[in-house]
Length: 333
Ligand SMILES: NC(=O)c1ccc[n+]([C@@H]2O[C@H](COP(=O)([O-])OP(=O)(O)OC[C@H]3O[C@@H](n4cnc5c(N)ncnc54)[C@H](O)[C@@H]3O)[C@@H](O)[C@H]2O)c1
Image (tube, rainbow, N blue to C red):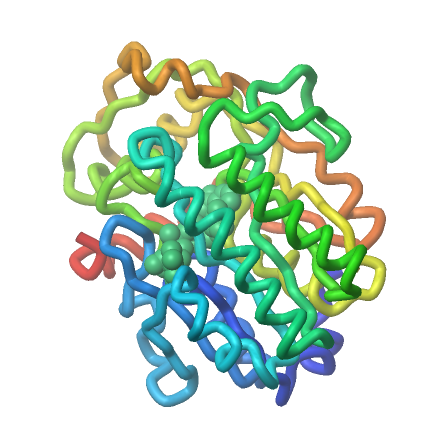
């Protein structure tokens, strides 16, 4: 399992580039890598509608190099990837709704820019080791549960299509050009530093904001089953994927503790918070068409191959996340 000594050996003194490193998952990864002795560089465009936030790196001043740059700005990429040992490629447009209202931007970031990053690596740093953040969204509405990596890819939105392209480019470059890459298909990830301002990144974010503010929040539908990965467990998976040979050229699902309905999730949040009210609502029509219903991952493959498993219970994940925003909310609004 995610063994600290092995991670130290793998990353201490190593040059690590994180695209999207001011965002939710990228910043948690950056913090862990700094603690392991990694020499971390971040590329992030800090696009206001996305999850990037300078507060996410609080306390790391001088220990991480940050380039405010856009991965769509191709000419900048060679200088950024050159000399790096690892690339954790997390920069992405993540809103499903935005991908429907502005599909070209989603394509530019999640498709074209990914190809440009890989081209920069092929030409300027073919020995780099890459882990790409893919998503469960690419499966669409599940034919069966839990969803394993062989499930058909039939996304319900433009974001899912473009993330398939991003993932496929990584695997192609791995197969054809020998650029060692792994893709992790993340499910709903939660934890400190997620976007809580609105529901753009995840509905759980806005629920937490409303709870901390003492306001009621809305649960749409409510009976959908979902699984949630705590961000520290997701970070373990990124580090394992980057440091293990067996992961090269492969795709793995990440899952979490046993799935719960959204209604149960809302109840747990209120219990942990000690107070709070939520309102059950019908799914709004525009969301309903891109909703995937029940989803939870079969993550046994990464368990078998790399020894990963989610270590954090849902209750612990929610407790830690709420505790963080009780203190930090004002930096995230
Ligand atoms: N959070 C989840 O539940 C989840 C689930 C599945 C997949 N993922 C994937 O994980 C990755 C990280 O997600 P997150 O939740 O941390 O999101 P996030 O929005 O917090 O982080 C993404 C970061 O990428 C940056 N970014 C976006 N476009 C950019 C561009 N053109 N150039 C440079 N930087 C850019 C943003 O500013 C942001 O800081 C994404 O690729 C996402 O698709 C996340």
